[in-house]
Image (cartoon, one colour):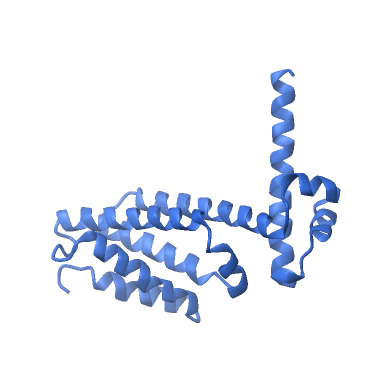
Length: 189
């Protein structure tokens, strides 16, 4: 097949896949995790049910693919913040706040239980831990952050403490929690 034809087919497949992911996420948000069927997803996506099954075996597989896409986007966002300009303390605070706000946006406990059990989540957590650990180490080396506790331990502390953001009532409360966590990293603590 000519290269243009292959590119067109791949672009079409990608567009169908993205439409299925977006449609499924919208349906789950509207109706709940267990109320969504493959037939509804196919109908709302504008594709035949048989075609949908060529892409995904079931709703759970679609949701896992959607979640993987979300995680990749979140990690890219966090990486950009970590690599940004400014003093290390400001970049660290921005990474921690971004993480906490992402955590705060989680809503459906059933969906979270399903989606957070995969290996993709473990890899993402390791990458996030590395971002935070490296920023803490950089801050400790420059004297801006405490150096009496290993960066690995402090990164673990920060990320575990900020998972509480998922149960906080507002973004303002999330930002206050970030302030408490960052305060514990300062050299004056």
